[in-house]
Length: 118
Length: 110
Image (cartoon, rainbow over all chains, first blue to last red; front, side):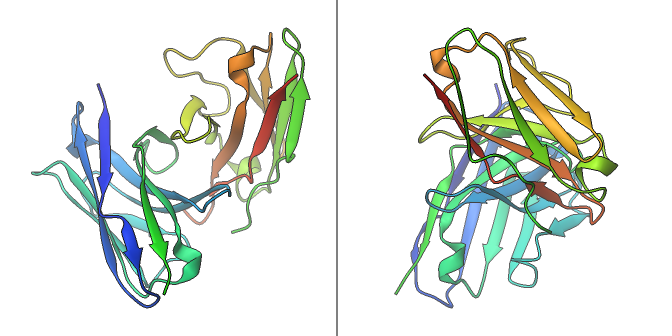
């Protein structure tokens, strides 16, 4: 069955960087778009980014454009999110998800918590 | 991209039906068939329950149904059960090739 396991979250100071990973198994990773979605504590869902199956197409929310970079390694069945210039507003649980051509996050991981605080 | 508009809360008694609305614009909900609904229980990851406006993934009860009219999509849950108590979020693809979520609706089963 589809399994997505996020890692790399933690406490980081404002202005710092963090790289999240998502290990995928149970499906043909290289065939699927993938997305990152975040949820601030007690708040709603916010789409962050998606990447096409080959990695050639990416899209970002305006709130992270220029600071975050999505990438993938199909040989390692892994998805990444490089986050730079982090601010308090980036504090959230970050989920990775399989995605139907960038239109529909389908299967979600359990998330990894990123806390930006001094 | 502004978030889609959902009611903050809805409630219903077991066995009843409820409907949650999700209002966007012609640049998202009204312009595409890519509206999805998610159920999230406390402390858990969201679960896809409706995709492409009306379709249910395998394993999702047929008590859950979706529809759309103009710029507003709707999720209807019939025969409410205690385990349906959760937060519900809608999402839509947009003309900017991005995704946007609704603010979420807390469903209380009385």
